Every structure is written in structure tokens, then in C-alpha cells.
Image: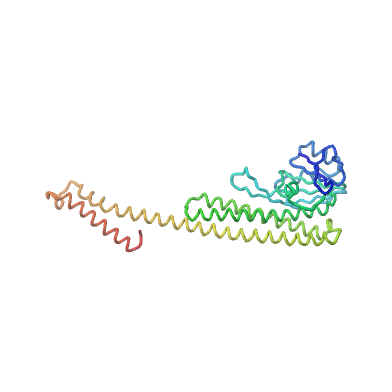
Length: 313
């Protein structure tokens, strides 16, 4: 899928694909077909790898320059509602700074870029491509922080359920969130390396205000990384604590069931002895049954008293 946007009269406007050569446009590419990849590479004379690499879910963030174009790959957060377990993941986003336009490539409709199309991000223009790339990087860090807040809220809800439940389902859900935080941490650390290289090479910082903006982005990304690590450590500690609680609860249940089994063994033992075909006390007594039942009850109550005294119940 290829969509083309351009800022016209301070408003982001979608234009037709036939205007693909429009200067200072934003070409938004999602899961392109081989024909679409060929069209883009031939039209703008960029390497085919610049389009294909960001489509690989395992592609690492980096910067690559070739002829008159520059490829910047970062990892952006993505919420996959169709995924059953790990819903918060990261996907590569390729940003290509071509000679006359800006091209973004991703395998899915990127959650970060949707903020630009929905009008959430203000004061951006496709005519200022370097500044637009910096704004994309800034929004990426912001979306990471927003998703961290969502993860924190959902883990709190699971924690409240864990207080009342001994099932493994809640722990499995926490494990899924822990995996998401690992993805976030790894991606943010890689994005930081890309931003630092952008700062050193000066590709996007031709003006002093852009340089200051990029410095703020690096700090913002570090804050998001620190928050991710904090949430990850808290979640890991919480999982260990609740695993210990569940294990302790299981031990208590087993101890209670063992105590009940021992108590029930007392009347069973007495009944088994008096069920044998040999001479026994009270065998000829008309009250033998009552005596046997009474003895069973008395010895069982003595056992219950002992267990209560030892706090086994």
C-alpha cells in the first residue's frame, strides 16, 4: 500500500498516487507489493534494500547512506490487538530521506505515524523534512511512555486479581507483559544509538534549533528507557513474590488435606480392626457398635485438638 501526503496551506493533505514525484511530499508505504517496491526504487533511484529491510520484523535500528538518499531505521512500539498473548511489541520503521521527498516504510500501520495523520501532532510540515523526522523520533518516545502507562495499569489490575486467585493465568499474563518490556528496553537502547549517531554526523541538524531538539530527544529517549527498566524490575519482583505466595498457599492446602486425611484414618483404623474375624473386646456386648463409634469420635476429636494446637488447621 502506498499513500502520498503533502502539507498544503499548513494542513496535511492526501494526494493521488499519480503525483508520486511531487516535491516535498511524504510517501507512506505499508507492506508493499514487489511491483510497488519496484516503482519506488525506480522513481527515486534508491536501493531496493532501503524498502525491503524495514519490512523484516527482526531488523535492527541503524543509519545507512547511499547516493543521494539516507535510510534511518528505528524500532517503534506497536499494539497488536489480534495477538492473543503479547500485544505490546515493537516493529521496525524505515525513514528514507530522498532527494525530493520523505519516505516511510513499515510492515504494519505504524502506531506512531498514525498520530500525524489523525492530527494529534501539531506544527509539522512535509516541506521541512529534517524537522519532520525529528518530530517522528520525538513522537516515538512519547508513544513508548504512553504504552508503559497502559502496561502499568493492566499489571495493577492483574495484581488485584492475584490477591484473590491461585490460578496460573494471571502469572502468564504478567510474563507476557515482562516480554513486552524486554522488547521496549532493547528497542529504546537501539534507538538511542541511532539518535546519538544522528547527532554526531549532523545529518538532520543543519540548524541550531534542530540540534537542540535532537539533544532533547536523546534525553527523552533515555527517560523512556529508564522508565521501562523500572517497570521491568518491579514486574519481575512482583512475579517472584506472587509465585512464592501461590506456592505457599499450595503448601497450606496440602497441609490441611494431609491433616484431614490423618483424622479420617483414625475411625477407619478402628473400624478395620473391629472388622476382623477374630476375638475382640466387646465382641459379645450389645453396645459394641456404640462403643466403637464413640471411641472413633473421641480419638478423632483428640487428633483435631492436637492439630489445632500445632496450628495445622
